[in-house]
Image (cartoon, rainbow, N blue to C red; front, side):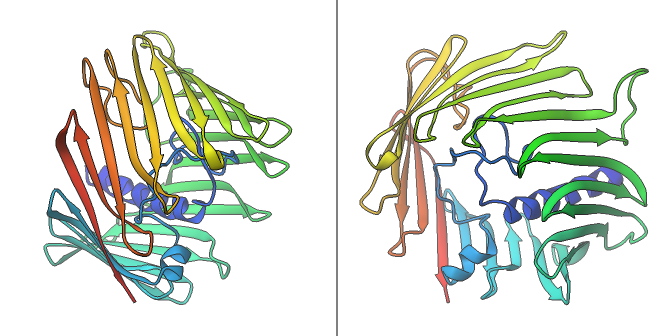
Length: 355
């Protein structure tokens, strides 16, 4: 159990660090960006311009010192940043705290639970900022450690490996063609597989058009058992117009099949998302304010809801779900109010302190 917790803790830190490094890339549709890194597509569906989980350069440029996140008026988490934009302290609602410091080419984060030292994570970097290694261990049992290693060619990541106590657990390999990711293979050595079953937990192939737009993502996952397929169509301006997906194809599995259409208004801004999935559907309208940022998002369903982007799939019948967004005088998001059929469902607040 302790081994699994430590490995998961390391994976979380890996995803955060890796996503930050490459968050300038866009990722589309139903596929989660943590599973398809570095895909060069032209559309980003993340409509909320969140102030959390940005690159250090963004915090430095905006001179942000601290962000405190409140959920329904209660403290949820906070992050404090140095002038160069890196997190130096983070605190969470249940008493955990993380302090980060830098020592030459190594970034060290110590985790505390109710003021007791709990975990230690060290990240070794290259002089130009590439992540080479993440080592995670419990403070009380320093003999047990999880290590992630990263390998590069031509400034692109080509392989990552994960070890627990020097025994390999997982490996990922990335293949490129003309600077575009065309294949990603994940291997899992930690679990017990069936006879004649592959250790490939994922094998994903990406294809592009002449404009380098991603037009298909097809993959086999769960050790060869399930298949996922995504297909994308674009306008003459390289705007994503439609996505069709077929997920969970495999023996004994329920197939998840649907389509998403995207419409654009003035200034080529996304204005509408229409999605259908079997007998369920949703239509999303995006409204912009004077600052050219999203002011409101309105999702309507007539008879059963389905949305890739918003958590409404478990609602039956007819609903209207609204997200109203507010910004400070620096155009950074400070509040999201979410209502469902006119009733406040939750409220998120971001208290920003500047240098």
